[in-house]
Length: 283
Image 1 (cartoon, rainbow, N blue to C red):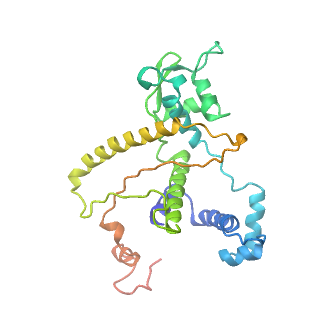
Image 2: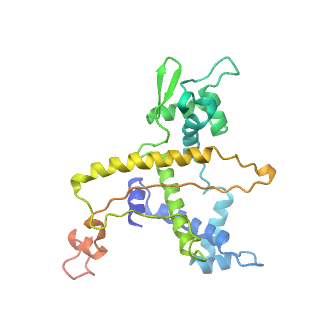
Image 3: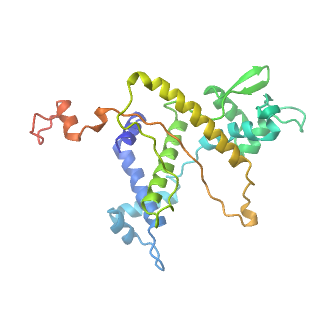
């Protein structure tokens, strides 16, 4: 929970705000994932399972009816535009390199940035997509009215709302995999989850070299997988195709001994408790 709370505090989200969202998620998961066969979910059963009061459960349900907890994110759509620019054969030239595109054209048959957005991002405004991708340095104007894509992935600003949404998606996907593997019914039935760990750590001076190595090898692997996925037939629910959301994420972690301290040791180090007098916390 420590890294998650660090993100929340950096975004200015208080415990009260987080608590409200957490209550809604507890109710949502209880209703969705812990149903009893042949029985409808009731507020009483949800309250017993989650530890919330029936009054709190009712309030959460009432707020959900008002769509208070709905989040309509544009993060995935922005990423799809960049991936489409790199993988859609209509927008790539020789050797699969992305073409430079005009924003729009009087010729209805010309493939432009606006056409790219409509094809890969639904009803999003092409101008808002263009402005955001220029702002984060993913594309730039090459000549007057022509645009060149500079990278394949959408990396929002560190403190921006899109990056916060991206963080939530990464955490959800990773923990979903952990949860699935914890509850798998037999060996070999889990999802791919592996780590390569420097058991004794590495020298601080070797970190830049390791970081560069990871970026090069991991980016190449992810692009190879992305190309493979792009070449698969597109699912069509209207034809009875069952759609599965799937993918692969790679992350590089780093910690130091300060992360391994106990809560009591942190309080001692920061002077909030005196020696072993753990009950004494100054205001």
